[in-house]
Image 1 (tube, rainbow, N blue to C red):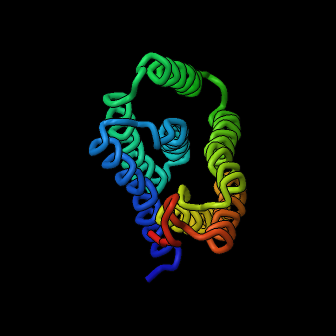
Image 2: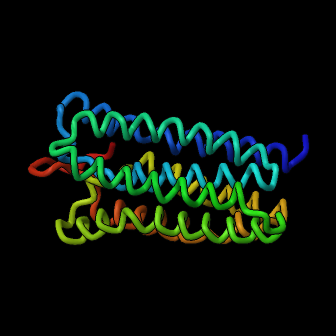
Length: 216
């Protein structure tokens, strides 16, 4: 079996798995009827990131990018709907979502209607996608700051950390194999961010406040 073919499908599977890690948060929201312990920003940044990389996949005709990010978009939209359904007050989060949609629509409209050469548009879109990925990886920094402050890593999701690390490594390797530097470079911060989470998990452990150390 071709190594690139095998790597591409493993990458798609792990990317889908990473997007599925939002399900526990949504179940927590549904069962508790509150969004108090769940952050809205990661859903939005991942949704935008999925949409942009899907568009990039269309431009470069990469079905692995299109399949994995189309599935990711569908899941993130579902997560956002569930979050907004139980958010109080809704106005703030709904406003943030609307701003994100307007900005995303403007970006996609620019790239789909521009008459510039495709080669130039691909480079421009790649830099937009890289910037979006950087924002996505930087969005959990508040979570890491909370770990340092409380000396407790119970808010760090082990499944998300593992799948995020795996996806970053796989997409970097995939980018190298298809000779697409724009796919390889933005995953380096993801690898570093995931390693930092693993270190904090190992150092502080996961335990609910008032309980013994617990790994979930």
